[in-house]
Image 1 (tube, rainbow, N blue to C red):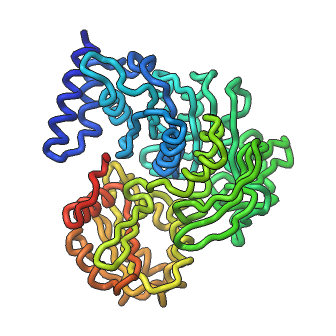
Image 2: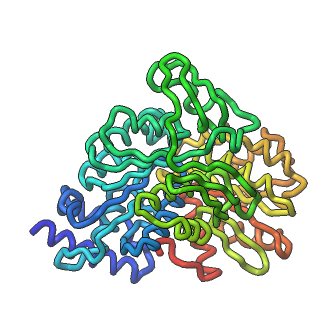
Image 3: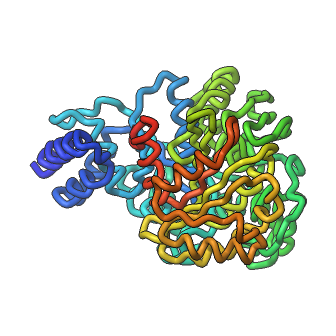
Length: 458
């Protein structure tokens, strides 16, 4: 009776909230969990579950993975909105049920918060888990990096039959494949394919996870990702079944890579630029391989997938190209800034910093971001705006990074911000908006109302 009541009330809540344009991605799930606390366990046998977790790249990896499922002819439900806590996942699953509790689709692709994974995974018993990477993120919520790793490890240990898809280049992520009975697929870059020219050994994970000896690297891509080896206990990067063997082309619009799989090598022009998106593509390619997709089908997915809202989302308005890229931690932010360095023409830039719960209330992480990159590309920046609740803090950080104070504009109001950016940019120029999560939602709502974008949950 509790399950039936939870399903009916939750579905009514979803319908009602969407009628008034509120999304209905989280609250209905909270209601369901209140009525039936063990509802996820009860729903697990109705779906084939694929979970995606990790610090960076979850939403984009899910988008590419969606394409792999489409190509396989598999009907599925997914939490496109990014509502990745237990409540959002519960909403997603119930949305795929009839009022009588019958599943309308049999597969669920679920982006899952790292901390939530610990409790959600044992209940859902996933068939596949993709783990993208681990970086320092929201210290007020996750605590130390190894806490986040252990949350995911706990969830995996309760699911010994789950196939794991892990980042071989991340010493923390790869360690999840140690000492477990689970089938494991690894992905990563081949040695010295994209060496980091300014590798910093004092990264998020410089020491061996087993014996605390400093790793030796034969090559690195960024942060602590690369080909590592512990000289004491011999823990090292595992062999990757799916591997980027060449970066054939790389600019601010796209990247073309050569990928080696057990079935052979192929080249693919990815639909999104950025080194980090190559990793996301490799993770999803692992899923395509698992689903026995042909090489041609995998290439079509990699070349044609649609980015998620706020994740390199591009909006063409008034002969200007707005690119919104979510930023939430130093490693991810640094990769976005390095991507922006490939910008050849003049551009307009906005950084929006909030400190709400969804963003992380501790904003000290901005001092670990290499904003000095912006000072080196000032000649390409026509205007630079800071916005959000903590706009002034961001302005101070930019000043210390060597950015010309006269270039910085503070715009707290999102409508004024969008108007300013469009007015400052010239025809055919790019506008880069780099917001934290809640700031992204606020700015995107302004863009949606003005330019008729899709709702964020679609």
